Length: 500
Ligand SMILES: Cc1cc2nc3c(=O)[nH]c(=O)nc-3n(C[C@H](O)[C@H](O)[C@H](O)COP(=O)(O)OP(=O)(O)OC[C@H]3O[C@@H](n4cnc5c(N)ncnc54)[C@H](O)[C@@H]3O)c2cc1C
Image 1 (tube, rainbow, N blue to C red):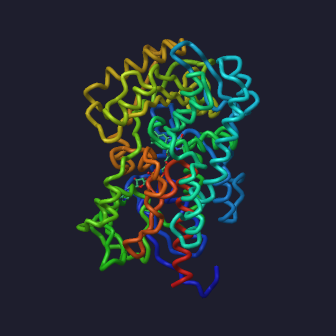
Image 2: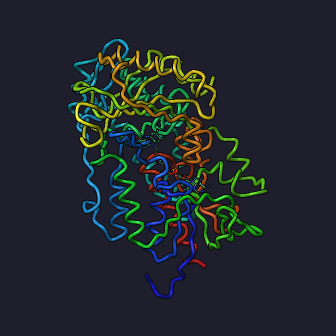
Image 3: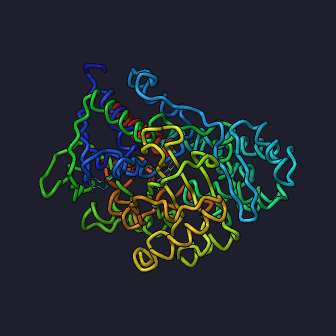
């Protein structure tokens, strides 16, 4: 670090992956960084759950864009291979359809196109044409939407250029994802498979813009990955790296206020105690930051953010199962019979779907220590509406029965008598444990085609010294994006220091 550069006292609210990413970069740049976390462990949504001899990743299971993590380690002068082992998935996901079709989505495009040809009526060439189209959208948008601060002067001209692309339709913003996918494929099973990628940021394929088809490019062309030992190893590695670089952690330390005088941030209050800070980064949900932590101010920003539609939530069952499921992979999807109806229920009616699509993640498939001999750790998730907590207790047994019946029907595995232990995470639990508004997993939804421009920027335009990172800030939710948000946030602070 340049000895004449100013070192700031920076407080970060929350130790989610976005907060850890920002902290590491700022500590490496020589700042005095403190993280205040209300929980007793780091990671936010990416933690571990233990029940007896079973270990579960609490939230994220699939890793994409690992180069973002590699760059984070190298920015701190470290080699990623000395900290975690990231491996490419051969089978990204195994799909089970209500009509009995079973389809392996291979990470290798040739193998996947062969599988599609063999198991469905879809043509190989359609997949290749589709992935080329998804790549084009990624190439046109990623640099500006993902890797840069949308609001810095430097990118302003690029944003203008992007708006031109947007208006000209080159990034496919005017069709819905579903409509675009129907223009490439005829087999309903393949349309449903690619429509599913809207859920990767908590959106609805029948409303979100086709621009989000970049997600398919990320998974099929850039690849899907897992971390040896489970996703918790990523959290652990980033926590260790942050400590090594001098970040100070304060656990069990809920922040109850961001103290602002005039329009300038002065610090935070933790359990009523004032902690002076020159900069404050909120890794907490943007909605809750404006409505709960920035006390007594009804700013324009708060009003704007409150009016936006949150992304979907989830209902997760963590089951220890006495089974050796040779026919399941690490990632499995059991599709619903009527996908459109499922999203109407989630986003318009705001109820749990009658026939939900079920995701089963079994980390024991690559991390044998996660369950005892002869047993497996099943993370069983369905999408849930944001903010509707009603079903939490009332319909619990019914939902569980529906899920078990469907698993038994589509996979052939009788599990009802084999569940040896259970823990449940509802949308309310997600809100309680991580502070996400209404239990939303990915901040605001992308159902509005302008969502990318509406997301909270990494630097507040309203309060000097207030910054944001994490899933509800730019560029959005999901592991690689929140790590990038930490990077953009740190860069914005560094820029403000050098211009001060
Ligand atoms: C069920 C589920 C499945 C998912 N699957 C995937 C997946 O497969 N792949 C993928 O890439 N992503 C997935 N995600 C999304 C991914 O987990 C998140 O985008 C990411 O982990 C969020 O990181 P974040 O930086 O936004 O922080 P968060 O994880 O939201 O953490 C925020 C932290 O701030 C703390 N905090 C909040 N308010 C305060 C306060 N007032 N004072 C102190 N601390 C506070 C919270 O306790 C928390 O620790 C999934 C998420 C869930 C829940």
